[in-house]
Length: 363
Image 1: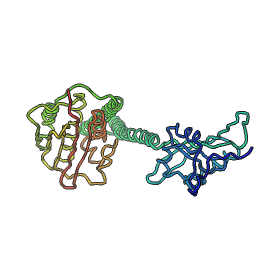
Image 2: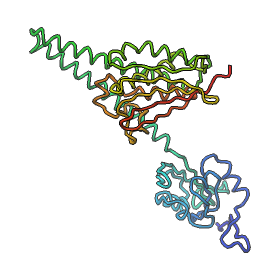
Image 3: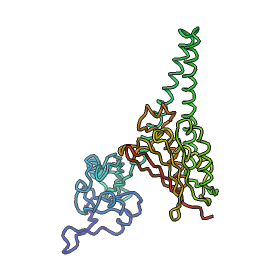
Image 4: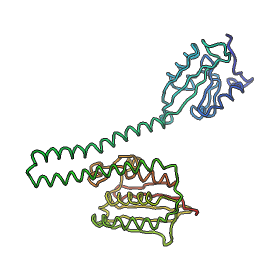
């Protein structure tokens, strides 16, 4: 079989190459990054997605100079000799680490030829980064949820065994253990409730609510409902809202949950500041809801991870306060469902402020 020249050197332009327009159209039809190579692994061209992935295309040069992935280069070499299709996973670490899967597809233009060296080799890349992150998040979620449930369950089981044995006839110890068991059962119940809430919100995150809701009314409702908890902790809840209604499109119960979670966080972790502020203001076409506490604040290294499931700045203190590690994850997903933006500002020793920016309802 004679070697086919799929590109030509343009006169006076050195190594600049012109790819056959039909082959260029073939590569351009793929939504994934795609490269066309001859059987010896020389780059003939590719589509815009490949340029975005790899940078400027080095047409007329070996694939090894365009793609720093030895396993893919070796698979291309074998495909060019034997005509075998392949699939290879690899990572690119610049500018940020990403995971890809390369499909090596030998192409023969003569349907009568079914074996041997192909006329052309096509490389199609699939970006697996997000899928792998989701899989890792799912695995971490299951592991964390199992751990969070296993600890109180082991505690309850241990106390049951103790009550059946050494503490059977000790009324004082029995009351003490029953109190601990009751608290651990409530902890598991809170965790299960939060898991179910998070699952429900995630299932509907693509479906934006259409019901007009007044944020002024909801903020006042949350202030009143959490006043007993605030009084118990010696904290004052201060409410600052416009006199007129501030209407957004939303799901009333979800928005109450969002405000409650943020205010409860302020009461739990900023109680030594003695004050939690709920403020609502208008900025252009947005309603900005801010919950601020005046507690110890949050160190900068923790801020990017606050909304991760089960992430805690201080795990022991969080559990002492009855936290499940899911409160801010729920807030993030409720905000996403309402097309709102969640932000946090904090300085160690000066408290923390969580802000949610809602688009105003045009109804």
